[in-house]
Image 1 (cartoon, rainbow, N blue to C red):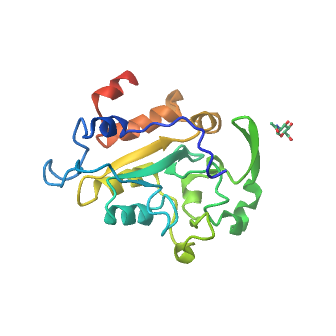
Image 2 (image 1 turned 45 degrees about the horizontal axis):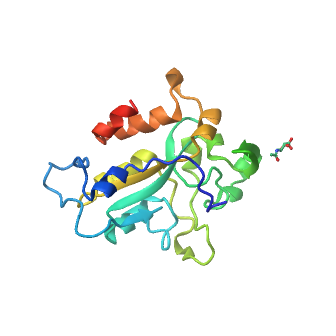
Length: 218
Ligand SMILES: *[C@@H]1O[C@H](CO)[C@@H](O)[C@H](O)[C@H]1NC(C)=O
């Protein structure tokens, strides 16, 4: 199921890619102009789930390695924990990319839920608090990939992912996918009736990602 990408997706960089250059400066913790801007001399290099051939996908080290290797954008998938924190993970379940099965205290968390018309069984991110998730360690989903970093790195939050891009020594864009919003809204509740999409957009705005095209969404 790792290759089934059926969820609605927002490509933040779509406008930038089409226009060959960003319409607005990407946010930076440094003074504007102090960082080398996104290159425009060649197509963008977008690191899909970070440098996941080397390091387990969507972890901090996988994204930092991708930046070292020259990525212009880092791509990630955004899901929600039981307590409403947005985290980076491609799958709704933790089975293929973490050591969750080795944690005996979570053995009773295995569930079957309907996901887009099919039953899916496993350890769902939406049944774990952030604190619980952070006790797990990631691993490569594919056996032919380098296993030397298995069991070392935790799942990161959406905010940590953004911070990695903003802390890069040059301007690096983010490319987050809104993963399974229907499922997230069914299983996770936020205060004030906010929905997954609201929390996603609030997070982007908090870190300065904005542009005229966002006004249509609110
Ligand atoms: C999912 O599982 C439930 C409970 O076993 C079953 O009633 C339902 O028909 C299943 N749905 C699908 C689409 O397989």
